Length: 343
Image (cartoon, rainbow, N blue to C red):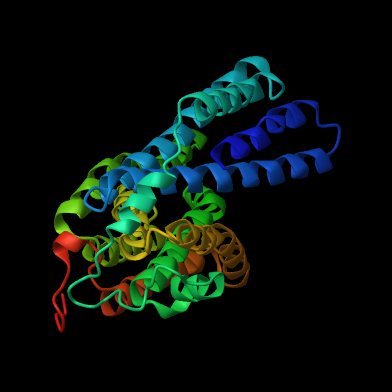
């Protein structure tokens, strides 16, 4: 699947370089979405296969930090290349080199990890508190979708929190620059503010992922969502560069607490035999948040203003954190709650 994903990426930069019409750009984005879905989901699943139950947070933190760090670095490089050489073709040659490198690595160096999952499945032991007794090795696709979407408390809470988390990011893409511009900030200042959020998010995951292996998953998620709510509330009321900068960093910290930990929760709960499908369904819900956030933000901003849209996102983040606190149980085996515990 990883190799196929990178095969689909090869035509994308070439289509964008030669695109004679907007339809080519749309088609290239469809291929890019397929590439992202296959390659990123597969790398997540492979890392979960390889590291075992005690280091999933570390693995997810490394994976997500590498991904979003690459986004930040590539955006910077592409901007410099575009400034010096124009929009086409030079910046897209960088993308072509990535696709070739990804295809080569997945074809030559990467090894199949499925047997690791099978070995884990063979030695799979039910939790002492009976939390996973209903999550058998053999479940239908319909059952897995239902458990991950709404039936199983930890899995469905993770899907909901993931959607709201990415809703915030989707909203930030469209609305934050417009909001910051209302204070007559320079383009450079707006660029700094917009970069602080993903920068802190990407780097912070290196710490939060591994700490969730030590301290447990649940409270990184519920507190992280509440931190995001506070940060969004500050963004909604602030009107200075310094206040927005502090809030953007706080928003990045809250997101870093949540992002790798949610994937680790899916790995903790889902049986190795159907873990890959659960990760895929979780990612459908999580990444739908990008579209929901962009659409919701635009509609609310049109009706009631930019700050109102940020307030709605803050309210949803707070509600999400409270739902996780109420529904999700601790999923990490080393930090699992005992029956009847409210922790």
